[in-house]
Amino acid sequence: MIAAHQVWTTLPTADEITVHLSEQNASSLLLIAADGYESWLTEPNKADIRKLSGLDPLASQWLNQLNASPGAVRIATSGNYSDSELRLLYAMISRSLGWLNNRYTYFFDVMDRRLDYTKEAIPVSKTKAETGYHTDSTAKLYYPDIVGLLCLQPAKSGGESLIANAANLINAILDNHPEYNEILHQPWCRDVITPGTIHNTEAILANDIPLFQYDSEGGVIFRYMRYWIESALIKLGKEVPSSLTVALDSIDDYFAAPEHAMSFRLERGDMLYVNNRFLCHNRTAFEDGEHPRTYVRAWINREVQD
Image 1 (cartoon, rainbow, N blue to C red):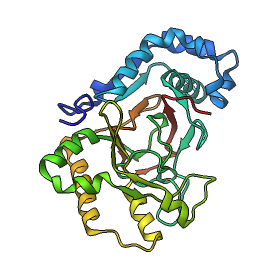
Image 2: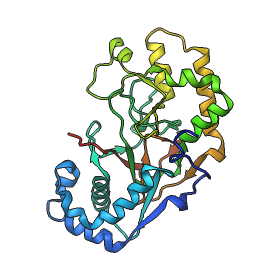
Image 3: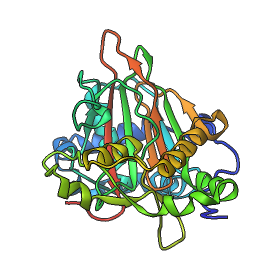
Image 4: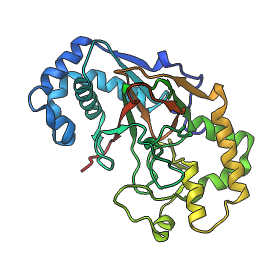
């Protein structure tokens, strides 16, 4: 079995990945943040991590849960906190798990900006559409190890979180469709959508990534974003090979099966962290109520970031 330490032996439930941040722990963190709170939000990698030493035992438990199966943790907060307080708690907890990346700002508000990703090269996170199963970052040379999401405002309807496991996926494919092995391990170009980067043909050609790679410990590294693979081929004037379409359909069919994906709703104050190497995530389409659905995304890495 490939990457046995990442495989789900049974489908986890939302309750099984959920831990609770006590009001006492939250109060301690907010007290720490009261002295220079702005730096935790604007320059988190420069903030004094030693001040979070009291969080170390919890952070160690969370990282153990993230680095191997199940690969996800939902941190539920209790208490009545303002948006500013929740952002601070989220920033400090995120920093306790690693280094923050600033490609879309350290803490990026995910909300419907009334845009259409099918008409311009923008992240689906700026729309209210279903995202489809994906891993974060289309850039060849960068991917976050952990993706964090803080729920400040759930949607009026829809917007449920879904998580599936690529280690389970590759084992199922090799058992049932070994003919897909080569196509899933060869590089495929991805469209270039990162702000501030050049979006020409040469950039797309250079942005080629296999769907499956493996780390030094034999763990799966899954880089999946179907729409941007197909978009890249179209922009390059190439047809999507039928063999690739069949393999991608097989992946999507696997993830669409309810027995292969967790599904749950985040409530205000919930923080979700997902291993972006061997898990992929999705969200259902949503509709806003009086207040827009607002999540805050963080990209977290094991290695030092800017």
